[in-house]
Image (tube, rainbow, N blue to C red; front, side, top):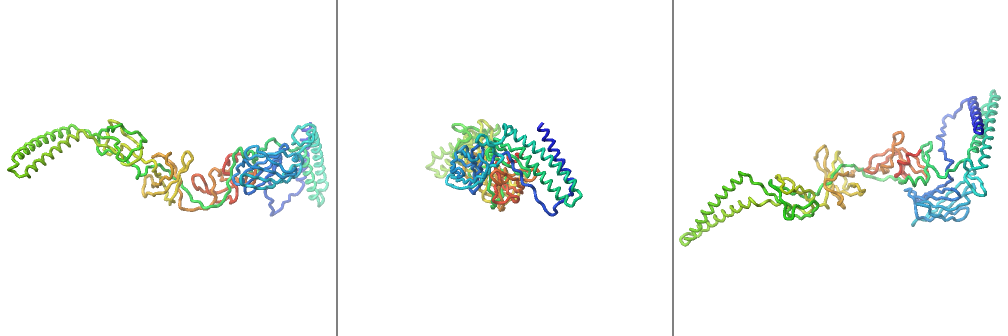
Length: 554
């Protein structure tokens, strides 16, 4: 019944106002723009106040007879733990205790009474001491007396709620009657010159009465937990407790010179001065050295024997070698007898004849020995440099082709990166590469080639620092700095979002619990950052972490 009466009263009042507006001539202020109305403030959140300095930012919240203080760093919006906070207020000095990371509280009975309370907060965190001031306002209609204690008005709270509802219904009936009366007055004065002024005055009075009665009929309901919400102007109200859950972090903007960086595909290659290949000069069958083939990763020294290659002998070659061996044996036999005869008559011959025969015999015997040795000796394959075995294709009994790579020796402490550039770029002396584990390795520019494949030119960099997690042939992305200098505000890529209209936006942290979207124009800077060239000014706080979650609040 009560709801029905309230509905009829509201309809009557609205009808009266429409009739009055229709009877009035339309008037407008030319050349004046009052702008968009200020964003509404939710009446369901707990009373609060905020303050900030160059070091800290605080939010004071009155809830249930206690005062909660959220303490964060001003620039990064990071909770400050382990701080000591004292508040000089109406009840004297309050010492707060920690309730969690960056959250402090204390009992404050004076907050049970409506009014304005000036607070002076002394914050001591590490070596930093700061004093902040804030004014906490407790509205009249947010407090209801209940047995000498303060409580937030909630729907259905006993006799007080019933009385409020009855009062609201009576107020709505009075507002409806006033509306009808205003319409009658407009009709009566429709022929007068002051019709517009009288009607306008009545409209204002009726609207004010209805607004006041509506506010009295709907007392605010303070929720047990403040909720994040988006206002019609696009700004977002995010309570500090919700900011902690979303992990919102900010960056204090500033214009600085930056070097643009380009992303180049690359791969790890061995240092040509500290690596080598082990190849077979002739084709043959592989055989292991003493102890067998060395496994991958084994350190070796220059000159260590890694394998043997035994060249095969064809049937025709074997026949030729046998014939050559018999001929040499025959010549050795003839020259041997000749040497014996000359030695027997060496008293009557010259000494040179005997020496010539002996030298000829020695030469024939060496040729015969080399022929035998060629049948059974194999070619040794040795390490050309110090390092470790990075690749191995050795299998016992395998036939190795001439010039085939059997082993690759690499010094793991000396590695290069070969990147491919598809545009002419003037590189600086430094570059970097990020690994899968999050580490960043510095690179030193060595040189750029003049020719390459696939319309690209190779660019070589030397790796500085620890190269243990890298392997030759590993693919990675190189961030190479160019020589051109650009000025702007560097922002992480995660802070730039796509707005509903397709524009790039960032969220500015305007005060403790309000975030405003700003349209920006950005240019690529490097693999992790972009350069904001317009839309955001220096000295602002931009959300860098949790921006995607912030953008989803409705």
